[in-house]
Length: 318
Image 1 (cartoon, one colour):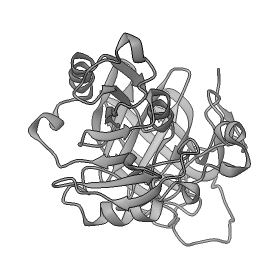
Image 2: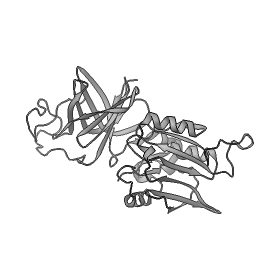
Image 3: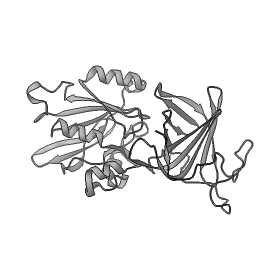
Image 4: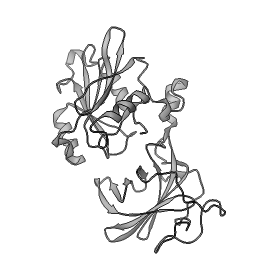
């Protein structure tokens, strides 16, 4: 399915307000009277992008763009030069000998495969190919309109502002030793559990637990301190979790590749007489694309509740 862009097709060139040798030239998007360079994405932010037909994606952090495909989920690093035009940003480099130029401009964008609405339209020129996609940052996230409809008015927008206990998660994450390698995650919806959020202790990392009536730490999320095994590539991490846990789950709402291995605490499976996990502590180890830590998500409210929490994990704007 081709991407549905809620704008006219984006021209690959940007404004020359920061002109330098080799800078883009040609027809310019935006107000012709505007001379200031675009500042909607700061230089210290990570810009994420995704596209289909064929599937591709990745991120730009500083001077490195990482280009990923289903066959190369870890991605190929590309050294790029950033250019701020009057209507958006571009990053230019070389990928496997072919010229690569990625342009991001603000505008509503759909990936054509989900109910998400992204805040940036992305156009990529790779050699002779032109690819259309969408993008986001942690400060300007996508919204999940389909999920909002599924969960009703209580979670009507599924925007970062609606994330459960987002302020507390952000505050705990900001104090953690691992914060540069382990972004904050929170729940878009906690399944109606209505727990009271509080800080929890995870050595070298951060955590937020939720207490319900009669159950302390009924559920929660944590970004534990980093260990050497966390540095392995995504394919190795998937194999590790698949070997360790009985159940695996892909998490398409997070930067890719994202997946979780889960079961009963201790990496046990659910017993035949209690497949729902009632009265047990369900635990998941979670990996998220671009992050170095192995997140923990847990629930003492049953297997279905843990799975709901996993499906509702979202990045928290820093």
